[in-house]
Length: 416
Image 1: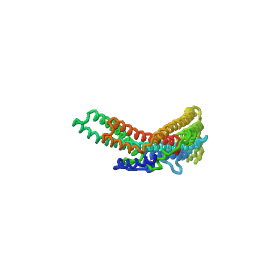
Image 2 (image 1 turned 120 degrees about the vertical axis):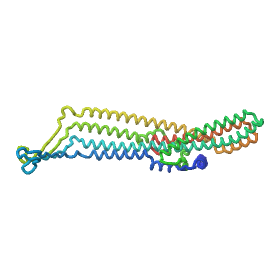
Image 3 (image 1 turned 90 degrees about the horizontal axis):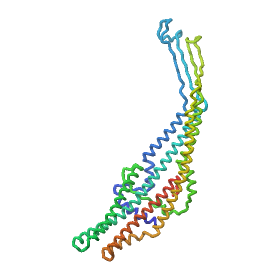
C-alpha cells in the first residue's frame, strides 16, 4: 500500500512540475552527479597532485658541474688562454643523502597521497549524501505542494461563491472571513513549500551540473525505505562505521604520516655527503691534476632540533584527533540510529491509520458542504485536519528517508 501511494503521487507530481524540467530517477541523478560535479573534478586533481609529489620525492639532486677558464694570462699577455699551455679546470659534484632521508620522504609522500584519496572518498560520501537528501526533500515537498494547491483551488471557488452571497446579504460576513483565513493559511504553507522546492532545485542543479530543473521521479526500488524492517542494531552499525568511515581512515593515515614525518625530520639532522671530481690543467701543484673531493656539513649548531620537536607535537596532535574522530563517529551513529527509530515509529503510526481513503472522504465532505449538509465550522475543521494529515504523512515519509540516508552516511555503508 505504501508503494502504491508513492507511485500514485509520482505520476501526479510529474504532470505539474515536469514543464521544462528533467524528470530523473535517483540513479540517473547520481549518474549525472558523478559525471558533472565540479567539486569531484577538483578533488581528483588533488589526488593527481599528491601522486606527483611521490615522483618528485624519488628524484635525487642534480649533479653540480663547474668550470674555470683563464680570463687573462699575464705571462703570455693573452686573453682567454685556455689552449694546451693555458689554464682551465672542470669539476662535477653530487650530493649523497644519508640517514634514510629519501626513504622517509618517499614514504611520507605515499601516505599523503593515500590521505588525498581518502579525502576524495570522504568528499564523495558527503556530496552524495547531500544529493540524495535534496532529491527526496524535493520529492516529498512537491507531493505536499500538490495537496495544498488542490485545497487552495477548492477554497478559491468557494470564496468566490461566498463573496457573491455576502454581497447579496444571503450569508454572514464572518463565514467569508473564516474561509479566507483558512485560505491564507494554506497560501502561507504553499509559499514555504515553494521556497524549499526552489532551494532543493538549486542544490540538485549544482550537484548534477544540470541546466534544467530536476523533477524527481524515484523508481519503486528507490523507495524501499518504507518496506524496511527494524532489524538493525546500533552495535552492528558502529562496527561498520569504524571499519568504513573515510574520515576515520583519514585520521589513521594522518597518524601514520606524522610518525613518518618524525623519522624524516630526525634523518634530516644527519649530514649529507657531497662527492666530487675535479680536473685542473695548470693551476695546481702539477699539470693535469685530477682530484676527488668530499664535503660534509658539521652539525654543530643546527641539528634540526626545532623541526623534530614540531613533528613530535604534530604526531601527538594526530593521535588525539584520531581518538576524537573515533568518538565522534560512534556518537553520530548512535544519534542516527535514534532518529531512525523515531522516524520509523512515526511513519508506521501514521500509515497504520490508512491514508488511502482520504481523497474519497475529502471529495465527499466538499460535496456535502456545497449541498448544505454540513456546517462551515465542520467543513473548515475537516479541511485543516485533512491537509495537515496529508502534509504530515509526506513529512514523516521524508523524515524516514532522511533517517535511513543518515544511517548510510554515518556508517559509509549501503544499509538501505
